[in-house]
Image (cartoon, rainbow, N blue to C red; front, side, top):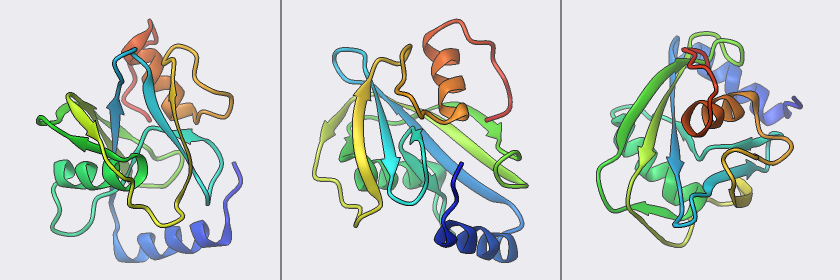
Length: 151
């Protein structure tokens, strides 16, 4: 995976400022059962929408914010926890909280140049370039993929 200088600098800063990092991702589906994926401008791959949890922010608030920013998804009912995963292969001491998005409504995405593309895809046939963690979660949730504690 290609890492930009910006990404590398953010990772160094996070290592210094936060010995443990926590991220959130959401599984949102449309009326046809397709799942929302996003592609960022600063790193390769397709991801479930989400991002980092900020100081004094709950994981639920963080995902609500990230869904609007990245995908223009505003939740209409409480999020439900799917699981917490270790993401040490990508960033030492990183964890990802995955939640299911129930009812939602479309709004204008608010990210400023962070998202290159939003796509609604068949969860059992993700696009080429879906990150390994994203592909594992989709197979686990929608297919017969084995469960794993690792992102």
